Length: 492
Image 1 (cartoon, helix red, strand yellow):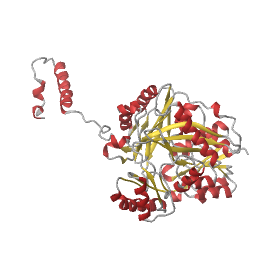
Image 2 (spheres, rainbow, N blue to C red):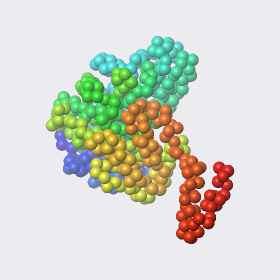
Image 3 (cartoon, helix red, strand yellow):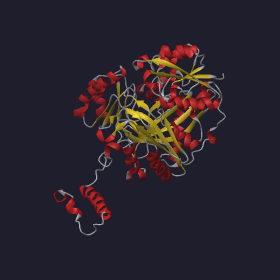
Image 4 (cartoon, helix red, strand yellow):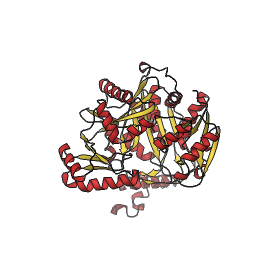
């Protein structure tokens, strides 16, 4: 079936991203916007756009019935959920299908299976995928769970079986801490997901977070598009991603990617998905979870493979057979993505709001900015603080690092405080430059990543230089001791 019109059930940069590919494929698009978003680019970039009104997310971008009604009103063949919002919501997926609309994503059964950490681990055991040692049995009795933790050995990770984003997770260093940590994890999980079930895992010290991009069609083609290194995280949210991973040699890369494809085949997956893995310091790797949607960081994969992943999503959803074979997919050069957040890293990462006066641009080749804002648009506190993704490609990792450093300088968001300077500190940290990273990088090097305040002597020297320059202009050279002009300097 050929898809002629797609409704994009999302906002911002991902909506614009889907529009771009649809235009290239000759597919019409429909976007949605709330009162807050009426001036954002996605509200006027599609062929048609519908106003969702004012109100909460539940009344706007999460209003399933309203979205499906708009899709039917506009004769849309398919709905693309983007990521976040309704992208992994099985109720929404069912409603879309029940209304004879194509859901651009995997099957309901795949979302249900892989969306629960417990059921996904059981399935991974069945198909022979390496798992972190742990316990994912039915019992939620505190004493039973504590006994299992004792068997695993500390440190142990308590993890909510539903959801993600670090909610309902606790690292337990000793048996004495377990019961209190379990209670905290369960309360947080219940508040976040209305489900307080947890599982236990052996906590891997200084792991890397490696993920593999997959796309599958309905004709038995399960393709991988290599790995991404996503170890630079803060509170379980990714900050910097790159591909290839500096940790993998050809043999390890082959084994990891083949494992991801084995999972896709084992669950008969359809569409785009990502297998997330933990890589231990000894190069053993374990299944973590699967994201049954397009990832925020998909552009770096597109940069090194030259493949449009959204196009493949659309083809798979339409039931078409991929012309690509695995041997056609190559990894060329190096790509890095940084997430630009409206936040103040030097003030406990507090979110910031305001009007973006101007967004800069880079004249360099192979620099891509995926951004849902434009000049003179307002940032709201009601959405995720990520306002853009900056992506670069170069022939080498060092070249990509240097290009990203320049691109961050070029792409300014004047009018609001962002994490641009903080990103530069990460990219210039010696350990990052070496490729020696792990998921606790930001926490472990927190002091190194703080804003460096000029030393008092440096500040004094700068003032002195200014005074000398002023005196020179006045032709008082040699007759004035500029240091004495710096009142109180000798007491600093």
